[in-house]
Image (cartoon, rainbow, N blue to C red; front, side, top):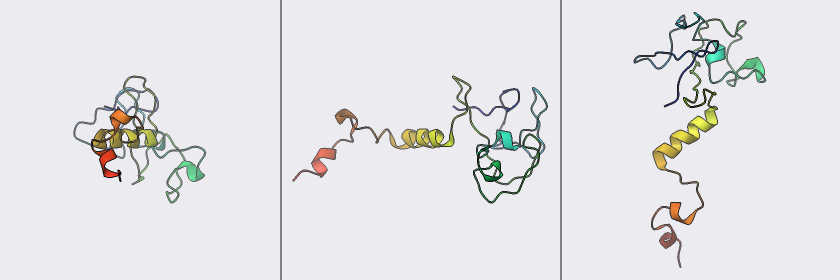
Length: 119
C-alpha cells in the first residue's frame, strides 16, 4: 500500500482514520506542515501557479500551511520511497479493480473474447 510521507524528512504520516492531514497538522519527525503544497499531488513547479489545478489561489510559501480545499496527499512507493505519479497511481487502481485488460498476450484476454468477434 502506498505511503504518505513528509516532504521534508520523509517520515510516514500516521493518519489513523483520516484521509488528509488537518490544515495546521505538523510532521512528528521535523515539525513541518503536512497540509502544504509540497505534500500535495497537484503541486507542479512548472505549472501556472505551481499547481496542476488552474483555478487555485496563489500560495506564497509552498512549504507553509495553507487552506487549499483541493489538497490531496501525494503517495510514495513503500519499496523505493519515490513519489508515485498520479497517472501511475490511477493505472494501478484500475488494474487492481479490473485486472490487466491492456495486455495483448493471448493468455491474458478475458475468456470468450475470440468467440465474441468470430463470424
